[in-house]
Image (cartoon, rainbow, N blue to C red; front, side):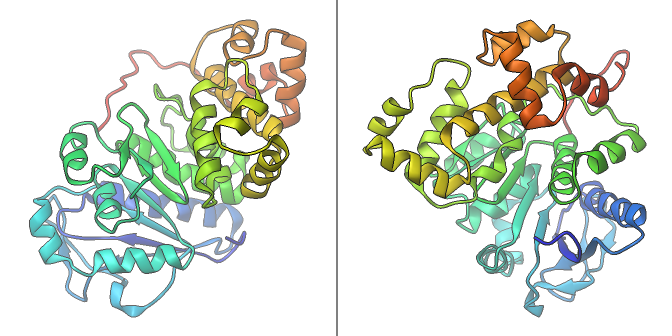
Length: 332
């Protein structure tokens, strides 16, 4: 995606929760107003020219339809409520449209049950995803080839983003804003919208999403292992052996796929985990350093600053909001 002129499509279908549809539109409009230019062009896309009826019973008219053949940079699939089999029959246009958008290079992001459309279109096959925990048993039964992650609030795999609730859906939109416009813009929007940016779920894996925009399955498997074991000792020779490669081949393929050398990737993964703890916990910096795999706090601070452009203390002071009393972790 380019820094300006990013085309955003927000899909609307029967049973759409309008609150999850318009959240993205309002966030990208906030970016446009801050830049005083059209960073994003955003429109509602419906399956046909006929308006759809939202969950609340209101009619939603599209700015364009899925038959118009427009390719987008970013597609959003809002949460919806309704019978899945009925919706498949009602909206046969959605699946081929999503396949077309993904093949054209679009990032596709779903809020809560919007992940159903990704799975039904076959785009999540062999990939990781999440949704609201109540939906996961049914989706596991329908789409067993998808690795459904129950405890993860946000998941990215190969340019496909899924989230487990309305708050996570807002984080999802802010993540794309951060990717396009930088962390300061995303942080500014967060403060101005006056919601608590701290989350009980860990954004570490989601913030590493950009390094998974490749199709090398062997390297994906190595990344999956590092996701689980980054805080412990890591032997790249052992990882190469487990992937059936020589160490030199492994190092070359990893960098070609991700754009980073394995050692630097591991540093980034640990720093993202540290960021989460700096913002969302009261742990001291030494404890966080040890928790993410660094026994030497001075080395941890040096690595952290090389990745995040701030010392751990400066990062906490800059990005951690004030605590709010009686904060609820409820997801909708």
